[in-house]
Amino acid sequence: MTICLTLLCAIAGDDTSEAIFDDDALSERGLSEADATGAALPRYSVAVRAPSTRCAQTAHALALETTLEPALRDFDYGKWRGRTAAEVAATDPYGFSAWLTDPDATPHGGESVRQLCQRIMHWLNSLPPDMDRALAITEPAVIRAALVHALSAPVRAFWHLKVPPLSTVSFTSCAGRWHVRLGRVTL
Image 1: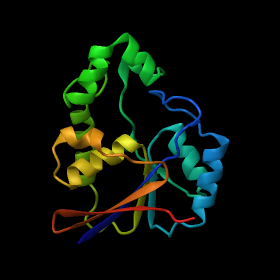
Image 2: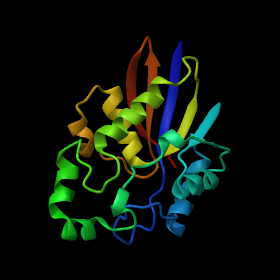
Image 3: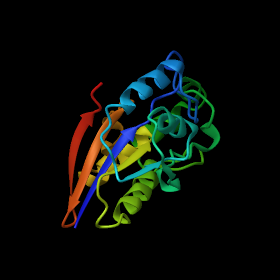
Image 4: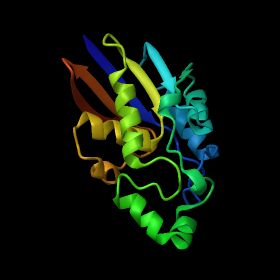
């Protein structure tokens, strides 16, 4: 049996401000980009999304009916939620540095990189073996974690993977081995 799964990175929030450790609504520009992308998407037999507002709005802009998948949620940022990366780096430079270099660090009291990677590994391993042409709209961190698992990469590779908004990564599992294809929806 074969699993064919495409992960689509949700549009980021307002790209005129610094990234925030939180679930922010899409900008008008992001909504327009997602709307234009919807027409270019192939048809999928199953479509799921992470529980964030950002993923819900991306799915809506893509005109997709999706099912909520809690396992695809973003990091638990703990006490850093709602703060910018610059604020965290200024007030907790050691903790911020540890989080970016040690996959087991949880200076924010939330989820470590390793815990996120394990959560996504378990989700991928729980997919039905006959899942065909499925789409998941999710966060960049979730896609990074899926790539770490599919490529059998060390968890330390997590921060070296860049996942731009509206990029896609297709995963195919055959006989228990994952194959990865990077892409972007062509407008």
